[in-house]
Image 1: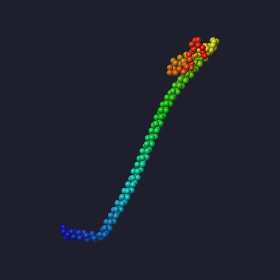
Image 2: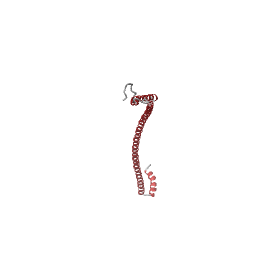
Image 3: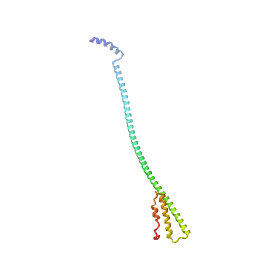
Image 4: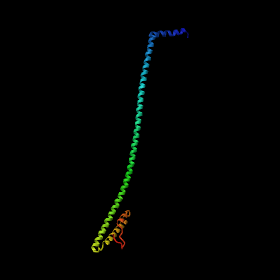
Length: 186
């Protein structure tokens, strides 16, 4: 294409364009459009910055909440450990209490058996005393004491056979066997 052809082609286009407005109007319109686009970009950028700040705040809040949650969990773990330790101590105390209760029950059973033996021994001694007094044979105090001791030994023997778990050593020490003949009663 030659210059003439270019002029032919662009001349009607230029005339048509200039009839619609001046170049300044076009530049003004382009500039106004560019300003609007730039303003829109600034607005979008401002919104983006605002959202980024909000997101940073939310991340910081989430981080604080996570730290608080971790601290609360550590507190709960410590409290749970404390409760578990207290429970184990209570279990140990309960076992010790049960052991003490069992010992006290055995002691009570022994005391009841000893009281029964003492009552039986007293009854036997009183019976013997009445029998001797009734016969009029109370010659000396030593004879009565010797008979009383024989009765006590019979009760201790019966206690050993009837209650094999009962510890009669304390009763044997309290109620010794009668003196052998020829020994004086003190």
